[in-house]
Length: 254
Ligand code: ADP
Ligand code: UDP
Image (cartoon, rainbow, N blue to C red):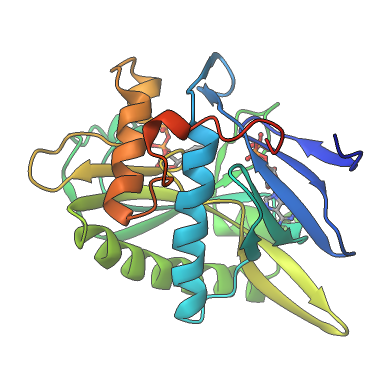
């Protein structure tokens, strides 16, 4: 067992000190939570699948010039990332009404929105991640106006790109959540995409059947959660080689 230092233990991931200064190891767990921690469970193999899916999507985004924290995948459950100063905002981009926006405005789930809608939530477990406005963000100093401009521009580019990528594999990107951070290099600072992109923080529906292939299966006790994540990985061509049986990964390198 390595004796690396744990920097942070979250609900879905553990962050360890990386091999070089300014890096972290992001380790994906099988734990799942919903409704601000009220519902907890384990989805066997989720960590392995999310590690692969997020690697794939972050790599494609890097390819088109979106700056991300991702450096490389290390093993079944872990990836090396650049340590950033996380901006404490969850940026939610919505293409189709579902979840909280449907409840808030009484819009039927599945209704296409007239244009992508960006929402911000303040990252705070104690407060239950409240919905906030751009004014809250700048007035309370969570991000500068320029940081926010960068986050919005990046979010819209990411949405356009991922929407097309998912359509190509028969999935509708209904909505998703992003986190950004500040990456400091010498005297420069850049806003980069951090955290993960996976069925834990995207809603993905089959284009033909509208079947849900994301965390809503866990939130709403629909069953077939692991199978849904596997199906997303399979469609993206990143299902671990040994297939579903190998989702726990080889012992010893977990
Ligand atoms: P939570 O904190 O909501 O329980 P996770 O279990 O996903 O979420 O934990 C991962 C934590 O690591 C999150 O708080 C996220 O903001 C943070 N994080 C993600 N990427 C980076 C990074 N590159 N540098 C620093 N922190 C990061
Ligand atoms: N989301 C997330 N983390 C959160 C809240 C939401 O990743 O703490 C994602 C969620 O998976 C969905 C989108 O953001 O893809 C919009 O979620 P919504 O506001 O509808 O909240 P929900 O009803 O899912 O709690």
